[in-house]
Image 1 (tube, rainbow, N blue to C red):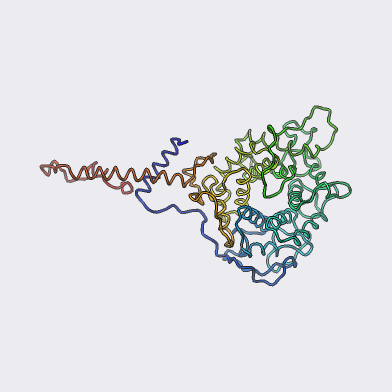
Image 2 (cartoon, rainbow, N blue to C red):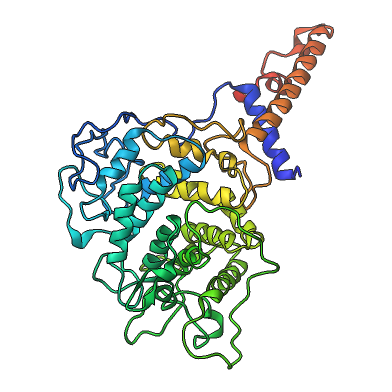
Length: 478
């Protein structure tokens, strides 16, 4: 539907197009100079020492996606990028895959990141990075040996209660447990069969879910981690990331059977046996809590940053909620949140201090596909091209989607909270029509004036710049 805002914007664009041929600059569209060739080092995959792959001028390894410091998220963002590009049938550069393989340690785990020549430190290996790498290599195919070594490592570091910690030996947390379960599910392992002392992976996840003993408005949500003397409380990102695992899903998310009606909150009528919610009810209970939060907060989740009392939109939690809701069979409840992301999440993905954030961009690509939206035109942004441009040149580039979609949505012309087919490409097309029409009218007006009789005296003609003269000048010169 053409709203007044869109028509006004189209008219303005038409005027600008009539007056200038310059196109607006696109955010972070330059292809990085990183080579698409394999790393030049000689270390074998999983040898315990990263290969000596060259670095870009920013100091970031050439095979890595993104320009920011990879110390805390190198493997995580690389894995997400590879999963998202593989989903879009973009074949990554050998250097990108080899970089990920070379980060694996001899014992099978991955750290968050290690620089070339740095040996592995078992205590700093990371379950989250390892599980994402498993999902990436599984999606790519052809990497069974490193995947098996990684899942063996994950199983070896399961806590006695069935959970997983971020680093081995620490207390478990909901986020890490959920992400590990995603990795196990991706390779076909049933968490019910991954156990320590009789406590399965599902049992480990259940220890973090708030059951019928919690306040009514928090039941079904997940807490991050129990703390002595601290009342259990719902945690937004823990609840969002746990949903995909509770639903039995992994990345990339594919459509599942739709469930009739909205998700159901746990039935707490006093007749339940005290204790964790049953696994069969876990995803529904979490989905019910999350959809309630979405409805209360404008179809996006909010979170408070450390040191602030003001809650702001949490793009990451919102995206993971969409992924989880689709996996749980509730795409209808995910639709408005996906639309909100399409209208508002571009700065999160592409306008950070280091330009494109590959983890955020990849998450949005995966979210768009799960929600049946177009990642080539997600609120006007070509997320797939944006992601591909943030790393080494792929073997095969993005080749689908709306050919008029741009890499940047143009925040001044895309109405927030909408993704109903309106894009910068659509606007430019309408703007061109408006501009051409304005140009024809102006041309006819000038011809009419040139054909008019000349004034009889100089006094009648005047010698100064008149209002008519000003109107005759091009729009950009007024």
